[in-house]
Image (cartoon, rainbow, N blue to C red):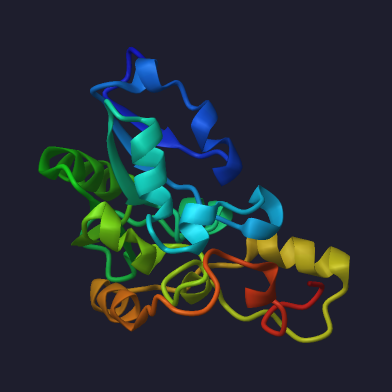
Length: 197
C-alpha cells in the first residue's frame, strides 16, 4: 500500500476499520464497499443517515482521499463488461468524492479498466450509489430464465453477460435514489428477480 499511487479497497464493509490508515495516508482510495446490515451488523450513524458509508471510511482513513466508485458492479460483470474507450457498448459507473484531484485520479483509473466515470457529487452524496439504490448492481445484470436449479443459477451468475448502462442512465438512476426506507443493501433486493435466493 505504501508503494502504490492508488488503492482499491474491496473488503466487506464491516472490516473497513481494519484498513491500514497510516499506510494509506496521502493516497487516493477507491471505496468499493457496500453496507449490508444483515452481514455487516448495524452501524447506528448509517442507519440514522447522519453519515454515508464512504464518509465513515473517510473518517477512518483520515489522511487519505476516499472516492466512492466501482461499488455498483458485481465482481463478474466488472471484469466481463469492460470495454475500450469509444466502444458502443462501454458502460458507465458512478463516482463521488470530496477531493478534486483524487476524483480525477479515480476517473482515469476507471476509464483505463474499461468504464466511463460519471461524477455524482461529494461523499455526502455517495448514498445515491450505495447498495439498495436504483443504480446498484441490478441495472448491469440480465434477468435469468425461470426455473433454474441452484447449480444452474450459479453457472448463470458466473457466465451471464452484463447489460450496457449509459452515462445518461447512471445519472438518471442516481437522480431517482431516495434517502427513505431502510439503509444499505439486502438480499431481499434480489428475491423475485433471481431464482435460488
